[in-house]
Length: 358
Image (cartoon, rainbow, N blue to C red; front, side, top):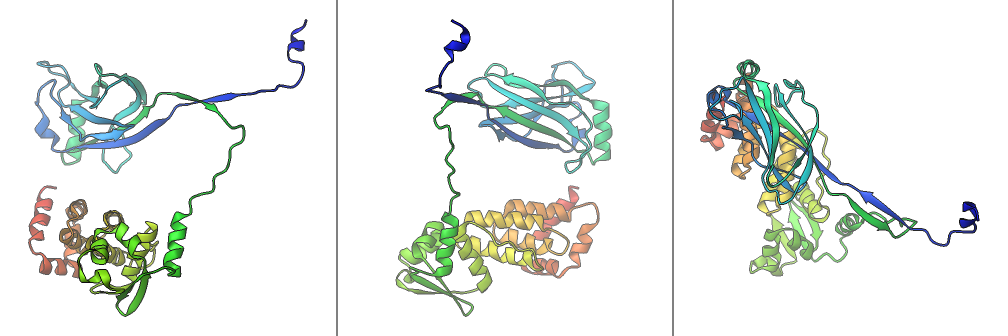
């Protein structure tokens, strides 16, 4: 009987399976400042970046200014990638290079992507001869004693094979919860509380607001006097800001402002988010303000960051003012800076401290 006879007729059953390998990828920039002070630290001693997470593991960059060999001088600095929480082997592909500046594309070293399997007993990998000390000194002298070590890391997960149960994929429609809640807000159906803001009325649903804000929960369901009222007066807030706050409560989305005055509206929205304990909105406003920092806005943004405990935003504003391009002089000429000095004169101490460190 020929082989063709074995396959005569119609196939009654067919199965399939799929093997997939997932990965997680991220980059970390480790800025080394005051490099001349690290000269002579000694072989085998290192400075470390903060821990950054990729693929469920913690990672740190270890930089050895005098190399990895103890009690032995070296003409080159070393750099290693360290996994902090290994319980089993993990494959990773990484690139470690020195950049001239954090915001630049100029690479001092040109190492390509290399793969290494980290294990509980071998949790470090890197380059013993990473970059010559003479090259680092030249780079450091040209950049006020600083340079950047950039790590691009991909963690490769274990492959997984699953049986394909359906020959035809069923298309699942996209979620509509956000649109449904937004429609409920606009429609006002079932609303059980009305807010009066600057002469404008806004209808809303107590349960939605209470679920999104601890302050609204206390006002509407707690022991405060508003908990039985169907009408609530909101002072010291513009109607359009309260409207944006309400929309976020229902949709988790900020308004797409691109016109003039965007920064000022975001500043007011941050104040509202802080007032009602909406932490995610507050952080999103911080991020928007970070993108819009310039000579005209930095002073008012710094004052806002100080008043509402936005430490990262405050540090960014001070760094902008401390730029060596004489930006501080231009900032001091703005009305926002005069308002800052009048409202919070102690901030000048932080600004001057930042300038002195550059």
